[in-house]
Amino acid sequence: MTLNAIPTWEEATEDVQAVLDAVGSEHAAIYAEADAGPIAMLFAATHPDRVSALVLGNTSARYVVGDDYPIGLSVDAGQAIIDTLGGQWGTAELVKLVATDLAQDELLVELMARQWRSALTPRAAGALWRTLWDVDVRDALSALQAPTLILHATESDMVPFSHGQYLADHIAGAQLVARPGRASGFIPVSFPATAEQIAEFLTGAASPVAIDRVLTTILFSDIVSSTSQLANVGDEAWRRVLDGHDRVVRAQLRHYRGREINTTGDGFVVSFDGPARAIRCAQAMTEALATLGLEVRIGLHCGECEVRGDDLAGLAVHIAARVASLAAPGEVMVSGTVKDLVAGAGIEFDGHGEHELKGVPGSWKLFAVRG
Image (cartoon, rainbow, N blue to C red; front, side):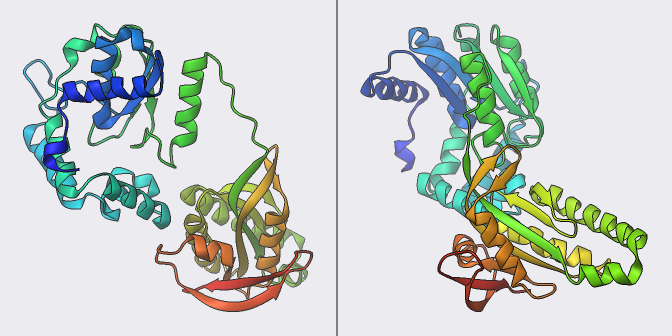
């Protein structure tokens, strides 16, 4: 995109109509977030017969402050945002700034940064957002007839929550959903909740799709020499050790967004939606448990699992368990699948050769996480 290619607001609404015409859609539900919000509001107001529902995420009818709009951002704040976007667009640093919940997952951060670079150059991004400071579609709000859902992050810096509240107050019948944190759109952190809320709004009922299989990263942990330690200290003392172990592990799971699947008495089975975050969590667990005088071995594998209620089953789970059994005390061992998936995330590995895993077909390359 060049600077001259940035459309006017009128041209943008015409583009929306052209897309609907091209796909043969006469009546559509529209989702728009951030800079796309004003375009969607204008289109819905000027073409009410084409819009069946409107969903707005972290957007605004006007961004800058005005005599009759005290909640707007100051000119200096707006310029600072433009300068930041123009200088850091497409970088991991900007992704972490805008979507702080992704900061621990280096792979997803880089993927999002690459997506932004593919969409716009830094100069074009700054120019695009500069046009937002001139937009004011507040007069269109009273003309909106489509049922409207507003999803707005409570801690958004670029578009404060008060902007979402303003939309809800000025669009007849609009529903406002306050989303904790900064993210409200279709990014990995917030996608499930966002999708569920939109589905319920559009259909009138929460009807999640029945999921029987999921691709996930499985972590297995095991306390080294737990049986001999139990024999040395006795049942009561060992129970206190295990309680401390469980508290430490669960604290790390909360931080890295791991989902506890099961416990094995002296270990945990955990799933993660990102392999890089799973590795970071495993390292943090190892370090934290060492302060309690406990050594653990941890294994990780990423694969498709069968969903059974709150439990996971399938070959991927067995592979993770076998990988963990081959880890040395204090070591985080991963399958080659996990290593390949975190390429570019800055995580280093030492080769551990090829192994036959009990009950698992073929041979598997294993790697120990360095550091």
